[in-house]
Length: 245
Image (cartoon, rainbow, N blue to C red; front, side, top):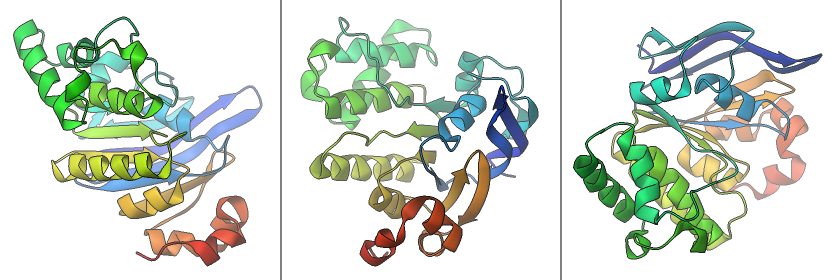
């Protein structure tokens, strides 16, 4: 059984078909990249999967259970957590207390939630700043805090929405290593990312969207050489500079 499966998933805004008939599967233990140009429907797909938007048509199943009609907090408790493109921590709360917000969704007892939050803060490399207000973090640190809040819900599936956007190469390499570690710890991952080196390094399989439609799916090497993907998204220059796996 697939961990996540959608069939005919669709959402339109007026005359714009943001997601059109998406058939997506993700097996337990898999890392799947979701790529495409800006406006391709990637974040809308995440909003549908996580309950922030209701689909116009189609089905979403997680661990065999339909997610249609469920609220985001209910979906999160079932084991599907997400990050957001624009990170918005609670600026006056400490790093630890920000992560506790996620942990309390899984463990209502404050002592257990704090214990879990401390472990997650250390795991993402923010232990030295646990007591500091989130307002003082750098962008790279805020990205790791966003990841930590999602991890604190103890997900089986983590949806990562451009967690590397705006970071320099060193910061990206640190996040790639961290995401790899999270995956090896037993968390399946669906990843939206424009940094193709990171996507290629992390993904077992890549799904490509363009104008809301799925135009390709396959292993990274096949996607990097797919004519429709090159035309719609990667460009010819990527083919000549892409890293080998």
